Image 1 (cartoon, rainbow, N blue to C red):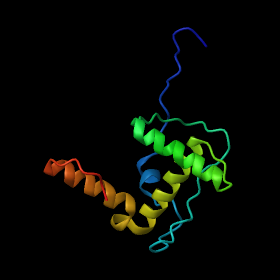
Image 2: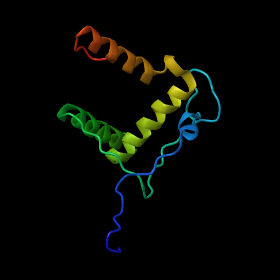
Image 3: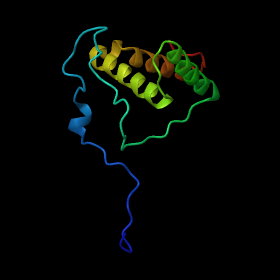
Image 4: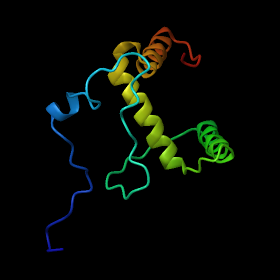
Length: 120
């Protein structure tokens, strides 16, 4: 690389219009938000870092082993990508009634009220 020219480690992000458009093609109604697909086994060019508690990491590993017993081998990254796809499809389809919106709203209410019980 040329002297004085450094490569940024920041990922380029899409514009506001791309962020605000629904990812799935139109609302599909409650329970039918299965149109979003996880990327699966391919080279991924974008990366995020997610910190998990020891319990969350153990739960993720248990899920990986359970899937293996069901004949569906998947690494932890694939499980996370699939979970994200499912939750975001549900959010697209159900909006504030989605599981994700309800859990986050519930956790926010509990935090605001000073409790630390688990969400929904």
